[in-house]
Image (tube, rainbow, N blue to C red; front, side, top):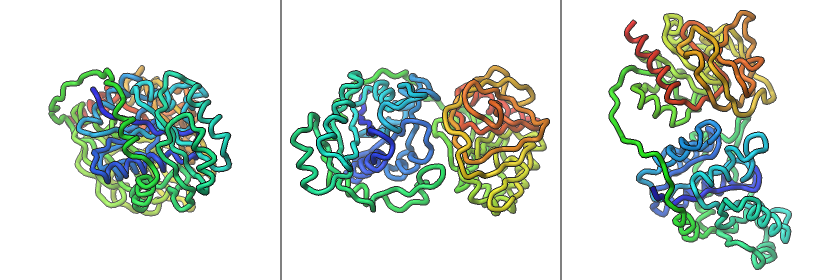
Length: 441
């Protein structure tokens, strides 16, 4: 498979990588290119901006959660029909799990054999920028850095002090502009539906970057070997409700597509506004339920879900969805939730967990069989206070979970966890099979 592709990497978090990547996606889209966006790592928020800009759903590429082969396969599937793929990196270019290379931007660049554009923040530097760039160019010779975009340049004199001595092509010189920023909150940037237009950023990139050079660099990427998959029509075996609104909005697109591929008809609905639809199972993703607690407390769907779960409806919930399944959430005020799981949730002012998670299903009595492997990511400002006799079905070998390395709080046919999971085919099959069994009961 050959698809022109480029990775936008950064020297460090905060260097302007997200702004530059979004701007390139937007500028190319405005030029008439069909752009397939991607994001390295487990982030949910940046992809919403990519999707809005490009009109194509952005995908995560994360070797820790997905494995290397699935990263390439997901890239191949998503890139079909695109003119160019633009991949936004994560953190600094070589920053991976536990200080290693695993799941770093460089790791993904090697997997995709993709050239890299390095975003360098020039604020407070002139000649020193050359030492920084040289270090990145020579640190890992298996990664091809095609050029740099120099961000936050000052006066014309500032650029003239740096440009003549560059050892690598400069694809752009972005002037310092405090107005060109993406707003954020406690879990990161605002979601795309909460932000204004990206036109200003796209126009800035179009004005100050060489789009033709970027396209040319992307076109030099070689064909990459991927597992060929035969498209097939899968008959629907069960209906799975997926909560999707401003409160529940964190989902990996690959998870949703895998559920469909396994035989699920996905029924999207809003717990804030809708009644629970007629479904055979329920998937509650993460998001920002803490911003909508009073609305969720009085929503008719909250009562619907509580009754359905107690009647045996299979329910799987992650992070924000887990909070919604507790008896109550303590935020600015305490609000009643569905009460399915034996715990209360409390919002805090500091991060309670951040990082990758891996675990194994060790408990019984849920739709997940013992031995099933779970991998994903956790990032939350809340904590759970479970009842003393609470039952957990997942033991973590990595990550915090709900308490003491345990995750997957269970009751009835419901499992709620802090881990945002990247589904395996086996995990998806377990969930869909549980929905089928419920539909026949």
